[in-house]
Image: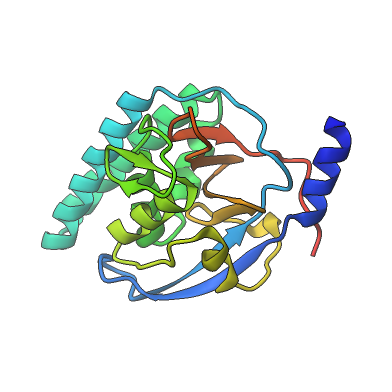
Length: 219
């Protein structure tokens, strides 16, 4: 039954944290620790975002970040912050979430976490493709993570299970934007305020979805 399936998935879901090391693309942060957060069970469908608009804004924000990383000026940092906040506001509007909560959550994490999230969001609308990790062409779930972290200068293992095997358990309640959401056979990227971006399965596309808030495993 659906109830027993959800209960079994909840039982199998775990939370993780791993030290991923030096992030070459980050202006201010030399090293980072990423929490690998749990969505306890299958993710429930939220309101799909407008992929092209969000992807375009995310790409613009990454351009602003690259300029700031090159110049290091306060003015260019402010431009990046404004561009990043615009992406957060658009995502929040499209999923009927709080723009202020999402903007605040993104601003509070390391720059490299922000870069990972924005990179993933640039691929909204790209089709799911098994064993793929190719910008604008296709991704499977771990392929999207591989792409997003690589854009931030971080190399991950290719397979989702290997990405998780390098980690240690954490409580999902402390999840931050830029963390992973993992349950057996699927990995996603948490972007704050109960939302995640992922490449779900065959026949679907990279999308933002609402993560369950009420089914998290205790540690």
